[in-house]
Image 1 (cartoon, rainbow, N blue to C red):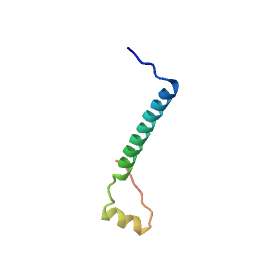
Image 2 (cartoon, one colour; image 1 turned 30 degrees about the horizontal axis):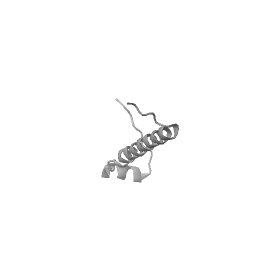
Image 3 (spheres, rainbow, N blue to C red; image 1 turned 90 degrees about the horizontal axis):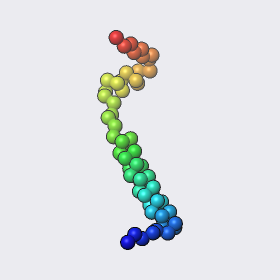
Length: 58
């Protein structure tokens, strides 16, 4: 026997699924964004010199 869900219950279930997905993706985004590597001392020193820095690729 299959039970048919009313339209209101379908909407509530769809909203709960979308909200759960949004919370999960938001958490994953903040985990990704907060995982960073601090700059090395050499890079900080060069940036603080305030001179022009040219980068060339071989």
